[in-house]
Length: 215
Image (cartoon, rainbow, N blue to C red):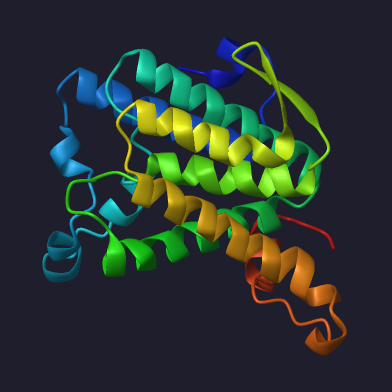
């Protein structure tokens, strides 16, 4: 399935890759080629049986074919594309590194504080991107479910909606926290006099070379 054809637009590379991966996992599970049990985050299987793919697939599986899947994939594509196309325009490596750092921080938090009831963290990836997008576009006006809201409040509105769909308030809060940590150390702290330009999430040069990004 080509998401560019389905959505009728040219998606940037990272957004397209995330969309294709999520749709592919949904199709494989719906066709029973694999099961969600092969994809969820299980630290025992990761650490003792080296099933390292679970560190990635737990962020990419949005459930089987259904309304919840289409809502989540729509939100993912919208804010992922908005970030990559506008905020990170021409900076594919920086955008990819932001997702990697966000996922890594989220994994650390789930290892220390995560709930055993929650097996997937794809929703928190949306929370991270929505938070960063909202902080970089704070005055933007949005229409969500026919209600106008300010972009600054978007992460909390999406979190409340996720809670209504059965998500965990702890996981939603951790996703927003990770987004805030990235925003603070990338957008706020480096401009402070005491920082001397230090950036905690500086993109590695190797990744920039691989993504052919020019500074």
